[in-house]
Length: 204
Image (cartoon, rainbow, N blue to C red; front, side, top):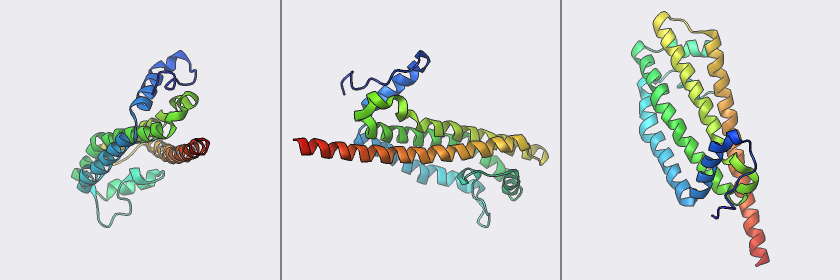
């Protein structure tokens, strides 16, 4: 890609670092890197995240992991924690602080690559739109930190903060909204690439 085609829309100077990151992904992303990122995502999910989750998994539990729910209330958090032993809650804290947070970075990079591939021909017009998936990562991390804090509080005194529970629930909901937006963005980008290719073919 030429330097001109990698230029983004005009943004305030404070977005300079984001522009550089955005251009990097537009320049380096292609189908091969997208497939490699997807394979890394799938491998981590199956061979790491799922295995780590078994440390606090209950066969008869109504909620396997709070992070997989679209929002949850204080009652759901208390129910999740109360039916698990202290070692299982400690494992859940470690899961949120380490393994699930790393998973967020992995899927964030994967989605950024896919969006960059889909919108590469339109990068001068869409600018840093390819970095949208990192918004999902930020709220995922906020959710993880809140759930870890709630779990630590529950281990200490058997209660949880209603305000922190609201933060965790809100972050989870926003995370899933970002997820939906990212999938729609990738779909729109793919359709635009198909239409563009068809136009070029018809003009040749």
